[in-house]
Length: 111
Length: 116
Image 1 (cartoon, rainbow over the protein chains, first blue to last red):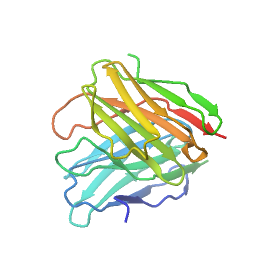
Image 2 (image 1 turned 90 degrees about the vertical axis):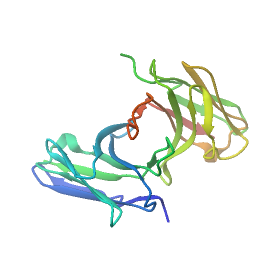
Image 3 (image 1 turned 60 degrees about the horizontal axis):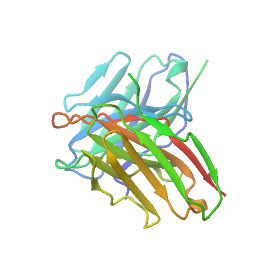
Image 4 (image 1 turned 135 degrees about the horizontal axis):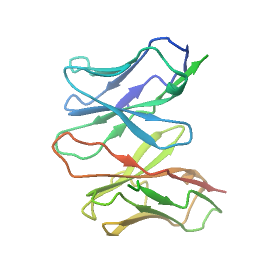
């Protein structure tokens, strides 16, 4: 089983739609969680951290469910510029600086 | 401020040749990471350094791969001899030592390697 699993998509949604991605992780001791965004043929960039209480940044909402070991990302009012691959990222345990990246979920927003 | 700098951006070589990828981290960052990205396996950590010291190289595929960080502003990833299955995008990333849980990594633009 992979440490971090995501639905690869693609998710094809019209502008203005709400879309949600889920990600599951296997290590219950995982400490920190993030969503990174990667545009086509570009490097990954941090989109947002995921806090236990859930957090929101504009149109983006991230949530963590430790009991079920999954993380979600909700995008409201999708824009064309949201088209990208979204990587779920986990710091697998307390005493490591490593990050484990999921293979990503591709989002395509169309007019 | 300059971000992470990688060179070359593209490399095409023949099987059996030596390949050297270069990375300059963001000034003041204490950690440097080398990743490989393929369609099949996604982004995989190869090795990372803290204060120029290799901490975890468990992701290095085999002895053909080696990495060095001779100083705080430069690192290399070398493949010798290269094989077609090494074709991938290689990213370097860096981050600052921070509070527990602060783990934002800044990635370079990557080197797209093709081994024929």
